Image 1 (tube, one colour):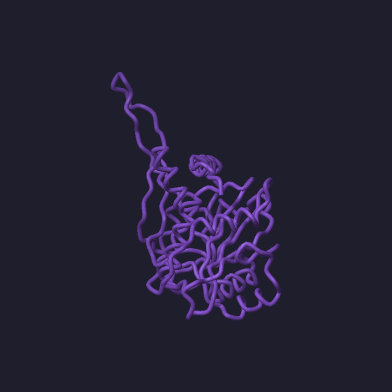
Image 2 (spheres, one colour):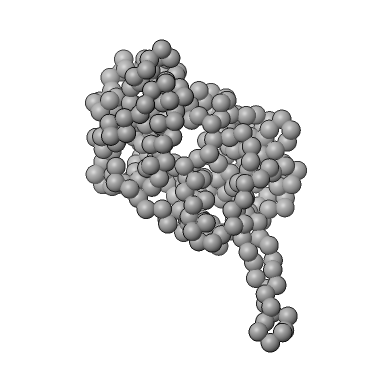
Length: 273
């Protein structure tokens, strides 16, 4: 990993100040050959965060220049852009950290926890509780924590959005009045709960709608997870990963649905930084 502050290599003192201060917001994006899918959405997130966290406007051109300076001309990396500074500032610094992209995504098992992300509509740097719950889940033999509201509805994992696949079997009539054939319609269901709407989630929704796939946002009781045929998590770092279990509820890996999700994601063009 390497870091740049306002377009220049960050010093140890600057990184220490950012870490100790603990005030700011960020977005994380996947950059390939200095291009990124959902770049406008990432910049919109940063602009909204700047207004809400610092009462400041975002200099989009400067952020893009910092990203270009920090990311390689070739290859895929995960870049995190953080607006950071003391709460009193109205001119936050732009900290860009870059790390290697993860290997091929693997299935995940989730353990539920009754918890909410603090101020869920801002992707802020106060992530202690999220990582604490994720670590506790890993210590119990799972891969991540799945947050559930106090009244029993699914929201998100520690760092990912979670989605579910519904298959509705419909009978299609034949041309000569026969009984026809049986096909399956897929609906992708996102939880409606206090949570952060992810950029990858937004790109998937947009792509699915382009492909004519039904997408719903609704409240999902934890007690009804067994009604779904498959589940997945998504974020910019690992993109798409199938979920094979939530507590003692198991899900099969559904290659056809996963392939459809990848197609939907790839309908979004990569934009030059």
